[in-house]
Image (cartoon, rainbow, N blue to C red):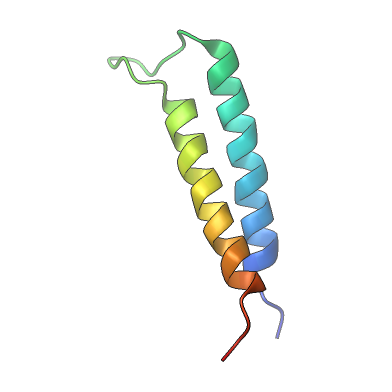
Length: 62
């Protein structure tokens, strides 16, 4: 059976990098009614999640 952790991990990692780049380049852009740069934080968590999926896909099955 095909393991979806590798393509999903790559997708989340790539999308997270795009969001972090956009959030860092936008500077003062933030969500309405907040002072939080949502793109930056969402991208960071997507990079973390993608990294976990890639790590799990590389791990040997026991």
